[in-house]
Image 1 (cartoon, rainbow, N blue to C red):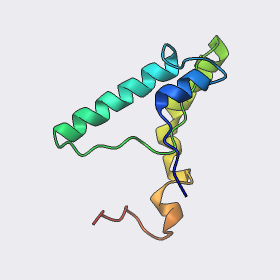
Image 2 (tube, rainbow, N blue to C red):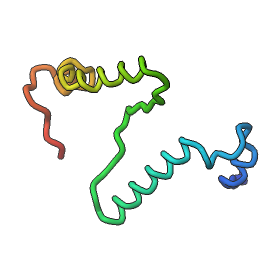
Image 3 (cartoon, rainbow, N blue to C red):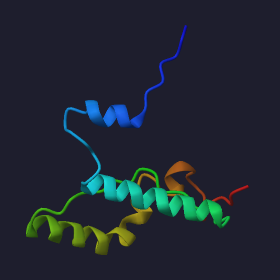
Length: 98
């Protein structure tokens, strides 16, 4: 079976939302590409955090909620589902990476 080659240029033209080059998502994408490229070229061990959710702050209430989360998050880490104790109950410190 012959594979079809799709170019990004073609996808931008056919995108029902129009070209995706001058918006916030494209700026963030370009930033992440640049940082990743720099890290690889300079042999810097680096990777983007997985399970990360970005969000646009649209009003004062949303800003206040996010600020409160940032302030309180370190205090809640021990109870977080991603905390190592929740993966391996009984451990008092994380396992060292190989």
